[in-house]
Amino acid sequence: MKKNIGFILLTCVLGIVGCKNQNGKSTDHNKIDTAAILRSIDSLGAVVQKAHTSGDNKLLASTWAEDGIFINCQSEPVRGRDAIVTALTNMPPLPPGSNMTVHPLEIQVLSKDWAYVLGVDSLKIAMPGATTPVVTTMSFLVIVKKTKVGWQTYRETLSANSNPGNKDQ
Image (cartoon, rainbow, N blue to C red; front, side):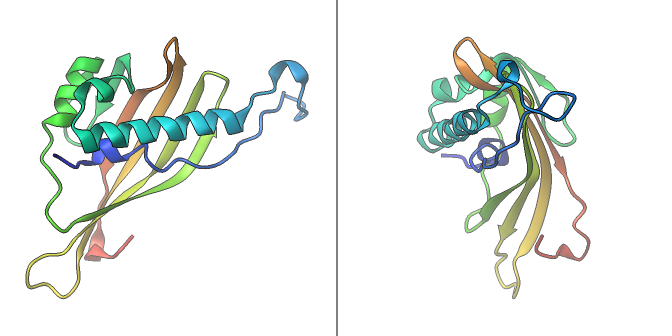
């Protein structure tokens, strides 16, 4: 069973954003139930985690839009659900004893059909013989959209951060 950054991105999604018209006032015709959308996105994250934990590639595929695009640091974009699932399942596992945490910095519901999560993942690795763990971070942006079958990942990108001094971030 492989643990990797791509599977962990959507597991920690919380927050509420109001929807207003150009005057800054809510109107009945454009009210969006952001709480319900955020619950759906949180559920999507849980399904991604379950797919990872169980190694269920079919379940993982159900979390991606058919025309999704995944970009991992220093790699070409991977286009299409099947290619993304293959790329994610072929990523190397996290090192033994490592700890991955997800830190969403911004969660926005853009409309009834679109939302995004921006944040940082921290990977803490206890190195044999070291007195302090090595910490690396990656920034992520996940765009999700509502499709005929529910909320799915549409775009996901990961970018390695510079970690000067290797401080816990």
